[in-house]
Length: 425
Image (cartoon, rainbow, N blue to C red; front, side, top):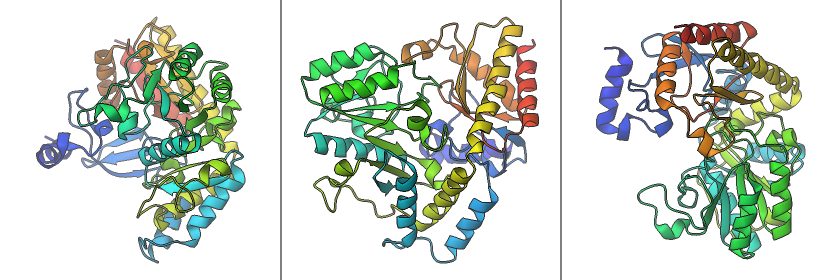
């Protein structure tokens, strides 16, 4: 038994499921999770000393690679002044100014501590601004674990939300309606049923929690038009896509402007952080100046702000990174497609720039229903086969792979060779 297995045996006795977030569990795979000791560049090292090429990137924020020197130095320097004050700091202002100065659709921004908190707050301010209660989300899109967003991700259009978790009263989700991703007719139908009471439509501009599901041409533009037509706000959940697809996120990448946007880990370079922002007239409703209450003792933590601002400034000053990541994505995911074709395998690859997924299904994956047609047992065997070859991915068919600047062409080619080895049986 390795040290990871020993730690997992200890963990399950004191932590539910042995992990502090379900996405870390290897339950669907049938083995103990790898416990990570350290990371550098595109590699992580477990407590048993094994090295892996990492395609999780801490679920996205490590776009520059692990332990990036400038970010590391900014954190060490900030720590010398203290870890937390619970008071206003200059770097909070600098972070907000930087985002507002460089993201055209963000006039004001409020820092929070996670993507979940960012979405919860954005939904509340949307309701406060519009005076309406109904929220439309999409089956398969995940927006954190706040009560109103934990709605059953079943396929098809539902007129009222069904809680997807024990402990969530039905009343918390009865104003959350679920539409079909990439299906504008399903959104219009819900808006009609809501009878003018839709406060907002919230969407992952690229679905990345049912595996990677790109928006069809015209889908995001159609959402913008529907929201304008029905007097609802459009919220882009960019916890995954923000500052990753382009510096301006999916909004810039696809050329569609949301009213509100939520950000997550990437603006903290991996530190616990989130943010929501948008038009000034909407954001001025947030307390203490407005009637929409939201607070957070640790929001704008100086260590997280130091790390995040350093990363954002680097990304802004080196936007050639985004072209590079686009090319890396073509090399990796395009290479995987070629291997599938060579082996005459009917599986599908979806990718948008540095985000990608291999779906073990013969169907083209365009929404939650088609994603759920995937063979999760086949994925489980694939995951174990790749892990044995030193490739570390999310232990779920329905999560994304993330590329970073640190993934060189050589590393990508090694990964493709591991894929080819696995499918050569």
